[in-house]
Amino acid sequence: MEHRLLDRIPLEAFRVFDAASRHMNFSRAGRELNITRAAGSHRGKNLELTQQGERLFQRVRATIPTGTCRR
Image (cartoon, rainbow, N blue to C red; front, top):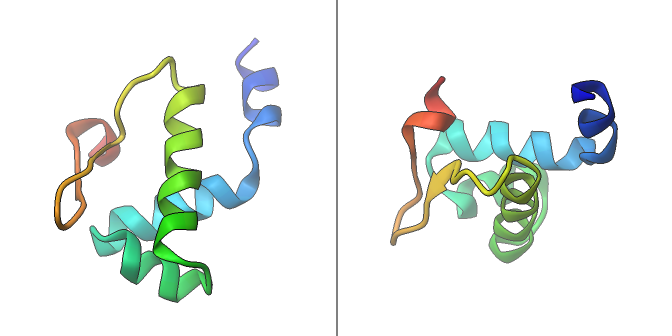
């Protein structure tokens, strides 16, 4: 069952998650991946929706990873 869930998540969503968690900021992650901040945030949000709605990022002025992200 878990394997099927991973098949539905675009690889780009994992790339955004990785970059945003390292940079702690969607703008910097977007620059690294050559996408806009909004596109990065949207892809991160899509990844959260596949994770039973669990928040992976706290969206404030500068993105700070939540405890889930750091696991």
